[in-house]
Length: 243
Image (cartoon, rainbow, N blue to C red; front, top):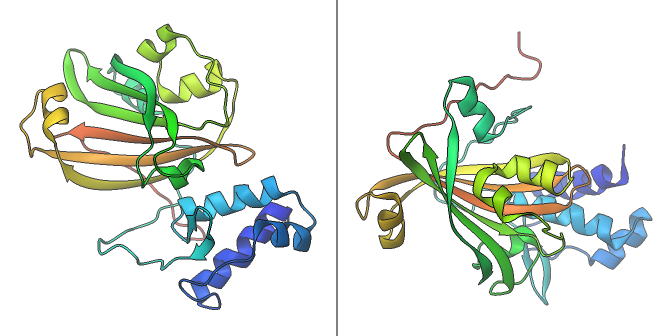
């Protein structure tokens, strides 16, 4: 078992079992690194994974704290789904071609809920990609991607206008996607979204929030994709050890 997995198991099991109480401050990255004889970057990768899974909260200047697994009032279901293809690949199976309209690609102040996902304090300037998605001539939604400042985003404007997120990461940056942490929720369209997507203010939107990590657990980006009604996702999941 790798050192990363041993560190993850110690804190994940402790939080799930209650041995690490909700709100308890975890040891410093330096202490954890010394305990497991690893670098601080290894510990940071594990803490980022725990944060992405909602098991810890990270407060700049204060430390890392155990979170309640059921913090949100909404019902959450976690599925372990393997070999998820990109959105573009899934659409291609049904014969649909996805295209984009680039709205903006510029530095922006990262929102409070996104900062911890990419390891920066809320309000820090990061590059943000905002595009509209189309199938044929119909707008099916939009995507906002906050890019990790730890990665050099040397990609062409043409790629940003024509390629899907997975393709940009794997072909443009040469990074291998190792894991995607995702969650689905419903929201109402705000004024900007309504204007950009040609829908009514308050119209229902399905939101897929996702954090993409490389195969060495480095955070690549955090994205939020918005889909208009009547778009839906269909997933098939298998139960390990099922008969």
